[in-house]
Image 1 (cartoon, rainbow, N blue to C red):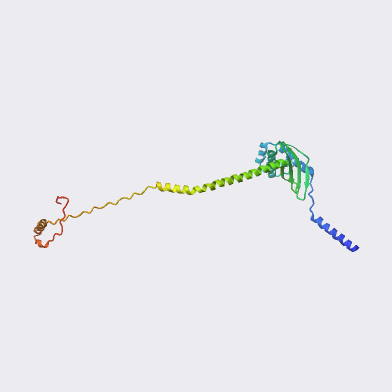
Image 2: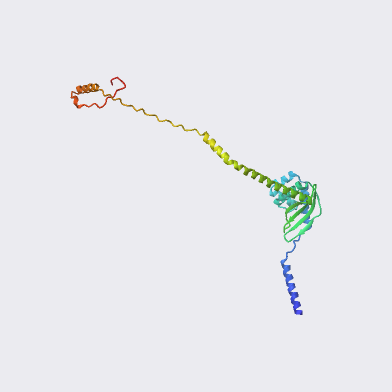
Amino acid sequence: MKKRISLLIGALALTLSFTGCGSKKELEYDETQLTYVTQFIIANFEVMDEEAFDNYRQASEYQINKIMSEANAPIEPEVLISMMDAWEAAEKECGEYVEHGEYQFEGSDSGVVVSTEAVYEEREATLEFKFDENLNIESLDIAADYTTGEILKKAGMNTILGMGTVFLVLIFLAFVISLLKYIPMLQEKFTKKTEKNKTPVKEVPKAEVPVVEEELTDDEELVAVITAAIAAADESVSDGFVVRSIRRRKSNKWN
């Protein structure tokens, strides 16, 4: 019996030792240093106007690193610019910053989160400053606090806008579909108009070549005279000539 109890105690101790080795230790940090960095950011952002924010955005990394080094605040230039954007967005949403409460620290093996409740002119908000495992600040998140009524109102407005947009699109599509029946009519009308505007091609009549009919004269006396004249000119006998046709010339002039 004692042997079994000792075995159980040994197994339990071994299990606890493995559990202790597997768990990660919480990051050690100095609250005073984190409070200094957090307060440095809030105090400077509170008094800066839009022109001052723009000057930081236009500054070089060397200038920003020099300013942060002199202030003993290890903040990277890109992180500082992102926090400025978050601060300005919060003031547009919640109004001008007024004050904040006490800081709350929440550490883990990967970093530390410093949070505080801030009061703005229009509503309250939660500020969260996140530090990495090297205790360098990573980001600033500002979440505005809305009441249940405001959340429901905002959700209702989003629902109405979404449904309204869908209905408007459906109405527009129905209107477009209703116009499709006029397309064949317009196409037919356009085709008729095109055919009407076409200039008809006039056929050029072919010129008829007048057929000149030969006027044949069967005048035996005229034939005899012509035959005799030819025979006298050639000093031959007229029996060898045969007159097949006689054609009248249009001109009486001799060529």
